[in-house]
Image (cartoon, rainbow, N blue to C red; front, side, top):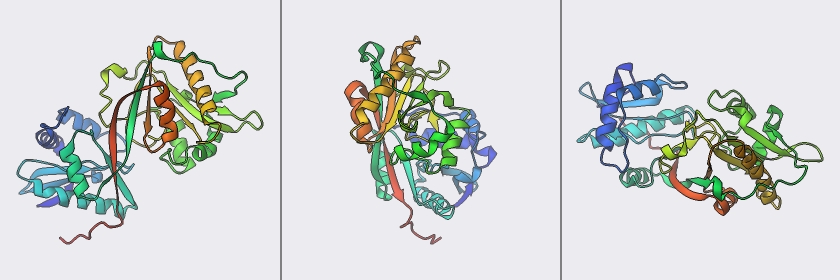
Length: 320
């Protein structure tokens, strides 16, 4: 058995491996060679980030990672389960050599065979990603404070946004944040706004309200699938699904948290009121309880999925 990088001719066999390996998992969705090929031509795809186990010139398993540090399960054909660990360790060693210090993975919570295997490889549950839903008819009456200065997010706000979002925002430098919020073709920066200090104009809190009819309607989305949502704070730098009607906000967990949250929520509700959309959705990580506490007051939990993490510090050496 040898391990090599993805080649353009692998699309069909990758689809076959994935479909055969996962077909018994709950709510499993088959893929196609065309879908694999499409994803393999999207930026920032790098063939060196996808690893194939080959037995007698026949690919029998594969795994891959995203630049964010998210990794896949090592999918393999029945009878070739022994390639899983070598595949995973080859990928993790390559990531460690590139400077990654930890990795994470996300799948449905009911894919227990997948989670059992990851736990055996040293992965532990760090958080769940909670998905929320609010019907327009159940929405509280918007009542923002008079004179509340809420204006669009600008580049000069990013340093303060980084501070406000400490422990939530995944990107750790302003250049990466600028690329995410202002140079992202999948994410209109006009969807973001901030509440400012009346004294000096600095941002006190931030929010997004995604109102794009070309994005997916929540009725067509399984909220238990491991899909990060475009525009949700805490999902920066991750491959994400574009969903219409998403609201998200950031505020520090201090005495002003709820007043700021309601100001931003009211502003978003007023924007929603100008459309024909009948709902608002949200996504937040469970390890930011100050955020989830607000959503749980008004939204219904619609679904969730776990994130398991592992450090690379104790990664075994290559003994092959």
